[in-house]
Structures are given as structure tokens and as C-alpha cells.
Length: 149
Image (tube, rainbow, N blue to C red; front, side, top):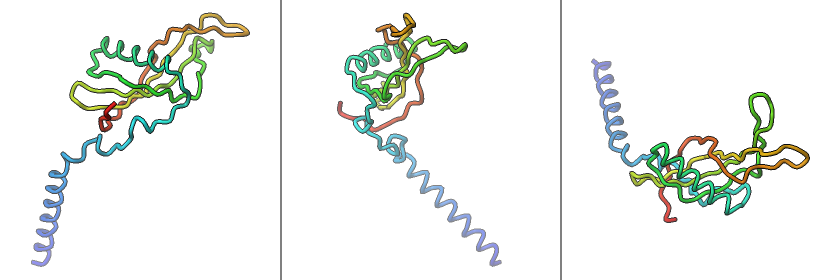
């Protein structure tokens, strides 16, 4: 009899805890858990022209791939350019990491890590790279609370 009462009490507590968590779920959005603000991202280097070009390239890629987001702000997080090599070890360009702030069509906002590349034009004592910034890859998207800018 004592075991039966204990077992019933445990089931009731488990059920109440489950109901409590179920009611709390709408308030535990991913953006609510991630209190990162885009303005808090530390820039590795500052180049306004390069940041604007990264936004343009990312928005063109978003249109081409039917991503439902628009990139509005960028911060270069690399401290400098990183040399890029092909599978045979030959240098073929340089890359840079940029964090982009996105506004989604569904009203959410996010931060996405992108890597952009400039191709190597000539190799020598002074390497010459293309001025054209091209999309190389992107990482995960993190939802954040939308900011005014």
C-alpha cells in the first residue's frame, strides 16, 4: 500500500513538472536564450568598403539560393587575410571571416558567419589578389533578438 501511494505521488509530480515545462516552452525561444548583440561582436579589422561588399555578395547569394533573409550589417572578425591553398598545396587566394546580421522574412533576426575569398591573380615576390570578393562558405545561423539598426 505504501509503495502504491509513493508511486502515484511520483507520477503526479512528474506529470506536473512536464505540464509546467510545456507551458513554459513558448517563452524559451532560441533568441531568448542567446543574448548576443551584433554590436558586441569584436572586429578583427575594420574595412568599411569590404564590409559593404560582403553584404552585397551575401545578399546576391541569398537571392540565388532562395534564402529568405536580407543581410544588413557586417563585421570582419578575422584579424587579417588568411592564405588559401588548393588540394595540391598551391596558393590560390586568400580568405576572410565576416559575421553578418540578417533579417528574416518571418520577422526573426540572426547572425551568420561567412567566409569570403579573393582569388590569386599572380604569384611572386608581391602576390596580387583580385579586388573582387566572392562567397566561399558560411557557417551556422544563430537567432538573436532583433536590433533597431
